[in-house]
Amino acid sequence: MNNIKGIYAASLSVLNNDLTLNIGKTIEHAEMAIENGCHGIAIFGSTGQSQLIPIAEKINLLNNLSISKFKEKYIIGTGLNSLGDTINLMRVARSLNFANFLIMPPAYYKYGDKEVIDFYSKIVEAIPEGKIILYNFEKLCGYKFSIECVQNLVKKFPDQIVGVKDSSYNLYESLKLDNFSILPGSELKLLRGLELGCSGIITATCNATSLLARKVYDDFQNKNDQSVNEKLCNVRQTFEKYNLISGLHTFYKKKDDIYKNLLPPLSILDDLDEKELIRNLEKLDFSIKSLEAA
Image (cartoon, rainbow, N blue to C red; front, side):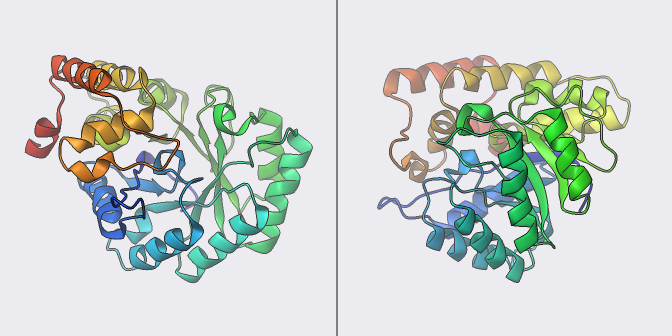
């Protein structure tokens, strides 16, 4: 799907008490988000603890996910610090007929546009049939895509580099490319992005806000008045006061205690922050109970 459009959640990974990946619960969570309005899911993105989960467990999940009725709606996060691991995980996913991949440049080392182009070139040369969404998130990997770098990658690989998730927010207002998906990483950018010609969003908080985000998207497409965008943005800003992974797992812990499990060094919110988060969300008429009732 070269033109990826709509509302995508960067889905949570649900862990057992021994911190192994709970395959069934992780897929169940992702498909709940689809049923609640998401056009699709990015699995094993940052929100899914992608850099912390063992590759063997990822492969196990992909094998199970390959028989999902929603299979075509998944983007697989395969960006790892090791080029070889990235390619090998993509190769497994391609053998299961997954087509779309979200890939962040490696973290830790310092580099520039030239090295980034070389990194993605090696991936494309190894897996030429894969469709790649670039992941622009300087806060996590230390590199921020320039407009020129994205343009050069698309010019070099027009059939493989099909979009960008922009969580650094330096691209979505100015980057213009034909048949290329631009997806900011926050609900705060959804409406403005759509007005500028962006394709939608991929966000952490769409794990919880999918119903609201989908209504904003649909209302824009149908040229209706925007009735819930303010609430959507307020909910996002409430979660943003905390680490998003910690806040979302704490929120969903109200539904199922298994969400309390996070891989170190991540952790759920402490009691004071949990009470504050839930209280502030309830002031917005937003809660687990309201999602379950929808």
